[in-house]
Image 1: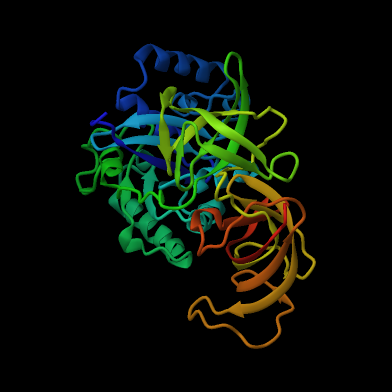
Image 2: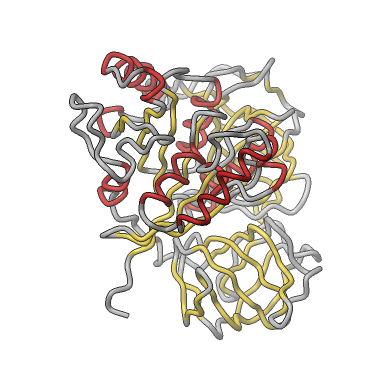
Length: 428
């Protein structure tokens, strides 16, 4: 198909109640992707559960619990065709209980829109989400200053929000001058698809226009094929269908693969039978594509979320131990040798123990300290040696940057984030 558009994965993040799901719902509706009668049904549903005004959010928040609580729990995906791209929109949860799903969403994205309410401004999770986007390697970050209607469309309120968010962007190492700030009201549809007449002072793009201004993602198709599993379904008439985003390489029907670590911990061999994207069968799919696949020789109990589908000839590594550079974001006390939090690497969650703090690095200069380090606190950047307390598939940044990033979580919060710089492989 000569007219096949390039696929771009875009994640919407931000503090709970700042209007992410509403922004996407309004975008889908105004772009003509949601029929009028379906929107009417969602409106009635919102009124029924006492969530008047949540109809646009309900486009993405499919689960009953999400609708009743008014929060996004899991990741939702929607396809939107713009003039230039085929956009897969990922609605990531803002609620702090569901950050692990947000990390998965960020790890699958080529670009991100951070949603910040003009009324409430920067909140704790605004900063956390930016750190995560940075660590997960999202190169393009833009900011929706939402709920402009709640501040009477005033330019001063917009400018204040832009200034406050710019401070946070700098702290996480993103240059605010390279970031587009949009002035929107998702609920009323200002600057979503149609240009608003209520903000004559704003001369930036609408959200729909901004999607087409995104840079085309560079697809690492030259690296070996890797697809971390997001989920594994059993579908009648088809069989076992693992789903996920191909991080690197190209996957083809008939390709010999190995899924590691698999239930056995030694890898499960198979062969790609079918590849489906947005309910369409494809002969092949490339890095950046979110797909569902059927693999010859794989049972439902053989594989699970966090396993990685690899080219059989060039499998990824399971780490015996690894060395990483980390940044401590938000730890209540200090991190010392022996600490064993949960590491989120691609879609896997594995506890890892700190064996050694090798050295501290000055984040401003990049210079390493020479004195012995006993513990790390918030704001510290360090090189550390780690041991997974289970089978963890991770690769060195120099071999495959897409498979080397991680976030560290403990007691419901992201405490640090980092990247693998060296490893000792486990024999399987």
